[in-house]
Length: 261
Image (cartoon, rainbow, N blue to C red):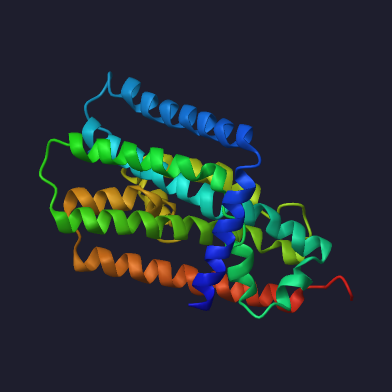
């Protein structure tokens, strides 16, 4: 409950600050709205020349794309600002202030800045996903829809963990962004169904660097139905990723040179 109350304070402060910069608030909505339109239009044009992509028709692709947009909007709202500042705090020694607080420093640094000016985009992306699910002509079992929505939330956390995995080497590299710039290039792979890639890359996207968990795997669970084997695979991969990131964070703290050292 203490962490929940702390997060509510984060939200209150973030929304009050966002209202002070209303032009930025509406600019972000406009910018992300254009991004959503481009993603949908890309597949609309592509399906004029084919009927299937990775075994999915256009109706299924709409669900996949809108699911990815929800994950992207959630990540931009909850985590992006915090991950941008994390390597700066480490390099400047400002991490000292968070290590002395009576809460988990990783929790505080990951969630303290809620991008309230991006929150409306979460609602827009959620509306697009509701539209895609409503227009889908096939039968979707309530259980599959529930697993799909839960998988999107999990996919947002997975994307956050992957970005942390690339940022935390800043403890040793002392670069401006760690290896985070690599994520933006690799992340493009998640914007397409993982079935279209070569088998070795497909395997990597669902095991080694599970970017497919952001939308492609949730969509597959929705269309094919969740099975014990698939859910077990997701659990094991996410669990291993979480343990790896926490271990890297602890090793980074051990190597960290504070501002006073």
